[in-house]
Each structure stands twice: as structure tokens, then as C-alpha cells.
Length: 312
Image (tube, rainbow, N blue to C red; front, side, top):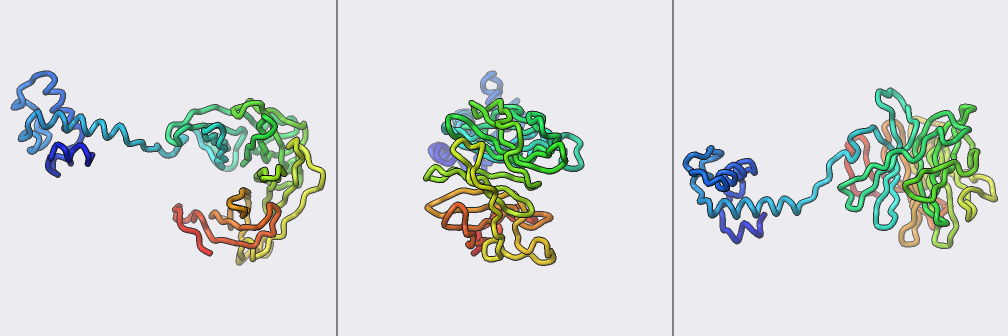
């Protein structure tokens, strides 16, 4: 409000008037009522001239209209988890998991999609994919990720096989909003681990990482639905992933949820650390396959639920 109110040279106490008080005066003015008969929202209002109040109100409303605020949480009609954003055609698409109402554990049957051009106003695209889209699956629609290539969109998801073991499936669509369908009719990888992340490097090579309790990757072929060499298990060192105490089965802080990306020739492996609860940490490397040595501490500390600066 500062710029317009300065022109009016109104006092600080006038600036602090609430909108409801100003509206009362404005409505009375428009109806040509006697100001002496107005409701008295505050003593300073009754002492102000209508000629001052009207521009003050207009200025206030105009400035309020220029302020855009996000409404949190973004999704308020469903229980969503594990957001995986994709920027496509200057619009952000947020793929999420979906916990069913009344769930007491991970009762997740489908995924949801929301998009926004301004990160404030979001469009609900419904459910473009569910575990039932895969004939070989019977549940556990957990954290997945989407990527664009070959004028198509590939969605890598962890789901439970009919046998009961977890696997990574891949779905494909011609549009980012779907609908998506099973691309190969079977698991892409199957070793009872979860949480896929996919990245296409600048040389065109695509990588798929996943894992809990371990960390694995494959180099995807150009078709994005196959690979030529078997899965490689990453060496989880304390230099790359820090140390965890009290759990001999998990000596490093790596827990699950890997997310791979590259910035300024440096590769980043973000992941959910420790359990439970978890926090978000990352490691760095000079190639998409590591070695991962640049361990960094928490980006997001779950206990405080606050963003903070990273620590070396």
C-alpha cells in the first residue's frame, strides 16, 4: 500500500484500518447516506472525510489485488504424498501418490496429477494411472516419477506384484496428462525395492535409479522401456551417504526415495535419510553413476519441518 498511500499523505493510523471498516464507509457513501448515521468501526474513521476515505479504499483494494498468495496445502480435497514435479511447456505438472480416506497405513491405489502456470492456482487432472492399469499388480501405488522423451511421457512407478513382491513398472502416454497405460505388460525391474527416479543426461543416456534399503540403477535404452545391462548396486559408503548409528543393517543414512539431477556439471543424488522420521539429504558425484562422495547434511529436517541451509 505504501506508494499510493504516500500520495494521499494519510496517517499511520489510517493505514491500519481494516477492510471491513473501509467497506462500511464506502457503501454508505455510494448510497448517499449521512456520514453521521454510519456505523462507527473506529473513532478515526468518523473523523475522516469521505473524499479521503474513497481513494484510500480504492488504493487498498488495488494493492490487495496485486498480491498473490498460495493456499496451503495445495491439495485440500485428498490425501496426497510424494510429489514429483515436471516442467513442461512453461507449466509445472505435479504427480502425486494418493492415500485413501480412512487409511491407517499405506492404502494407495492410484496416482493423481495437478498442474499450474503460476505455482499458486492449480488444476486437478484427476487420476491418470492406477495400480489396476498393470495386470500383474494388486496394490501399493507408491512414489513414482515422470519424464518426457520421444514425444511421449514415461511414468516409472513402484507397485506390488501379484506374488506380493514390489517391482518397478513403466507406463506411457502421448500426453503429459494421460491417460497412461502399461508400456510392456510386466515389471521393468523386479528386486522387491521401490522409489524410482529417472534422468536423461546431456549426452542422451537415460538412467533409472531406485531402492530401499539399497540403491540400484540401470542405463535405460533410448526406448525408455528396456535396458541392455543388468541392474547395478551402488556402494553406499559413509563418505557418500553419511553414517547411521544403532542399525547394523543400514550403516549409512540412505533410506529410500532417491532423486537424481545434474547442475553445473555436478550430479546430485537427493534421498530420504534415516527412519523414522526421515529428513532429506544429498550426495554429489562427477558422473551419473557416481562415485557418490560429496555427502551433505539435511536439506529438510522433518523434526522441525523447516528448510535450512545445507551444511558440509
